[in-house]
Image (cartoon, rainbow, N blue to C red; front, side, top):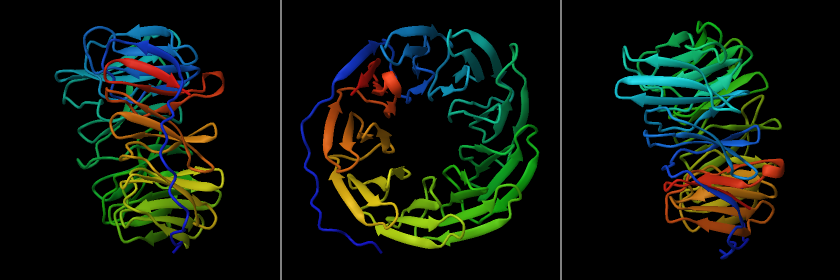
Length: 388
């Protein structure tokens, strides 16, 4: 195993970020904002008045507002030209497609018999379709364009077990289930193409790379299958449950297990290349950034190891439990810490660059690009901010 180095921890600093802009929506926001096409999209839990917003990511100017008249509890899903929002009013549940530039309603789908809510899981856009999970553990597929109302083109019922988020590849939509199976359906028809039974539940989404579908399960095994046929390619057993997606990068598969180890596996064979013992359980999937793999753990440590060798490069104390996956931003790494803070660390050294704290609960951060390249987040008191 890659051993612990003698590098000292990086001390916390008191640097605060520059607030590029701040917008007051006067609505509570708990779901992570989404970015697309130079705009940031935000949903509010408040059902009275407008509760979907589009803001200019560069200035924070509110471009449009839309009122669903129902509760929204998840993030919007951003497609190429539309934004998809799920909401519910009592036992009536809606999926809406809004024009991304104007906020105009393009189509809506209503569900009340049986009342399956589509507002518990973020929708997924792929292969020219929109996929929405329900709290009845079904998967719906919609065509993203067309006149209102939209036609749901198929439904997958499964056997009543909770489903993971889906991924799409080469005409397939693939997802796992708490009933121990991985499913691959024809994306256009919903017809099953293959099913793999493993004996343990899947709670995190599969990942696709190099023609393989790869996912870890609660039994602690990383499974790889041929994406087209479902034929097993390889498997690798850890000694703890796997609750987060694996990451594929440059011929390697990186996985974190509840045995408190970060693993690097060969993508083609599944053979272990190296493993690194962490201070505690990882709180999210690892991030590959340049030549480093970066992971945050429940002990409140941000760790960077060499992607090729597993040797520790640096580690930094977070001063709290990480609540989001680390993400790259310019030359830094940003993540949410606890309910009320977001911080940025230098990707090369782990040095704290800035630390933002709010009295309100903050969402997970998202990062912009180009001229709208700030770190953006929203708060439970209705503010949306861009930091740098």
